[in-house]
Image 1: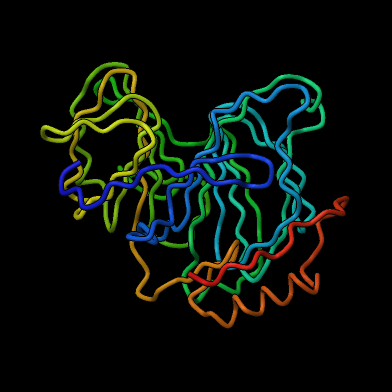
Image 2 (image 1 turned 180 degrees about the vertical axis):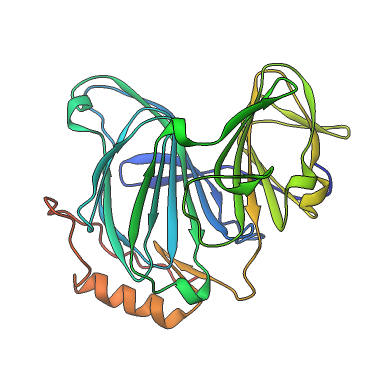
Length: 293
């Protein structure tokens, strides 16, 4: 990937009872375009006694994107949504002024062995939409734009690129692209990108100049229009990015905003439990103590 300015190594983090690899934010790079948070879940083999259980927790000022490679998650939220996500589909939840959701292993899988593997991503909202009403969209795998070119498979999971548009309803100019190749190929897609851009290697490797980069690394480019690299055989990479916002966005726990006062209000509202409830759920995740970043 031409003009690489930063390489971010995956770091272990804990979400409830489940370990993930955290990629963003990073002390030297808080956001890539509107993308402010990326977690790589798994791959994890869960036996019949292990399940993913993330109790109800709140969000403001962002959209979450869940994309699975393996396994299944039951999503429930304070809008009344109850929906299972499976590999290749997209859950796009926009928190706006406030939403609460839980993520759990579906009931029919809770007493059997299973796999879980995927990405969870946060996309900050533009300042003028941070207090919009929350909403939820599910897009099935077959509705994601997919195509092949010179033996390389592409998916436009969210946003616009390559003259195509994903049905995921994003709120700022961005892109989230999957690239798979069974054979070694040269990839040159800079003319289709814009803004800031990053590349995450899921499997296989890429080569840029004399350097080879392998899984669990994000490469951040100086100039997305110069995105060119050699992808190794049997590799999968994800390109993400878009136009950055003019104002800084702050993150505290699950709250994202350009206004620290909105974050403080969200902290108070969650502590006093005045956020909307998830129907059928009685647990909740307590407010942590770290400071705004």
